[in-house]
Image (cartoon, rainbow, N blue to C red; front, side, top):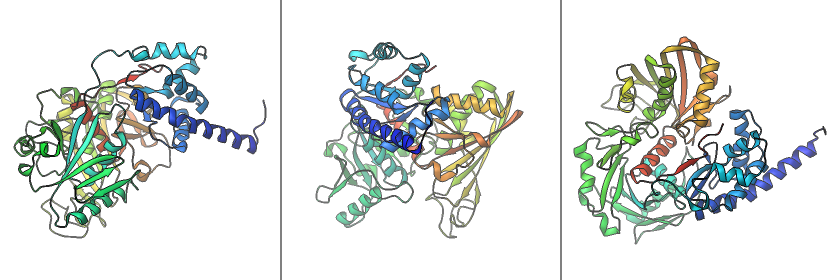
Length: 487
């Protein structure tokens, strides 16, 4: 065996960089020409940097215990380009690991077997849907992140088209548009927007990475006729939080050009509260108003689901350590909610959360089994849910973590559950994480039937990704996810 030298190591790094650089246009070509989204163990490779691609390869070793080089995946991607694939999400990382574990061989034959449903344009099942107009009603923290995600995903087979945002009038239109463009362009938490934004004050539009977005000024939905802007059959995403019941949100449906409404907050009354990945299949064609529940509900429900499936949850308490939000005061002032009037930047604020009770709307089998509270803390983003549970079937920390790790890799909840096993991670490490929640393995406690599981979540960005997934489902945007089985 040849001895590694600093020069050899650096040369290998440069070789990997070169392959990653060559991979980027191939991944882009698959996306734009075939509507194929290439992923690396669930992490999209679309529009990713060379360093991000190299880090994603490194990530595989932590999950699989298998070293995966860029050369392995580059060969996969290069072969995919020649297969004339139908639209799908294809995990090139899983394919590469599977190919290595079977000992290599004929790569083309292997891919044709594993991707038989989409090779040569063949596709079983329903189509991927038709282009869908989307309107963001409100342009605050969640609204602007939804805009970033929708613009990022524009093209390929996503089919969601951000056509307009609705905001209240602010007097000088030109100045207002510049300010809103600036807020989209620069974000103190999530960093600069990756692209270009052009303001047209006369047309009242923002052109974001080539997407022309109409800015509509209105004080209520009743003032808007979307068809006047060429928008029809649109899904209105209400991220204002002003209306949460059917009567209030029904105002959107009375507008010409509006077809459905999606609320980015817990709904009240009979409105379905949906956690994508768990109960999104309950959304029927007749459901015109849907709620995406809360960020905390989205973070904890997938983890609770897999724990209940495997071990059975008898009872439990959910404690949320939550970043402060716009709802709180910067300094002490009047607030209708208990304790929330005290300075968010200076205090830990004990408050209530409806997330524990809301779990039952997505997982009826857990109704009445959970209690919950929340502590707002002086950080601007990324929160944590502490699940203190009594289980029917006892376990230990190693077994519990191994199960949750496997759920994060190969289960149907791959987009919802992430997994980290590091003694050094802190909240800021999860800014921009696209999963609903991230299990912190090093913090897991298990003593027979009593377990404590710590779940991080980006309460802004991770939640926004879940909202977009519901949008895709409501718009009949469907993708096969291949390979079906990685092991």
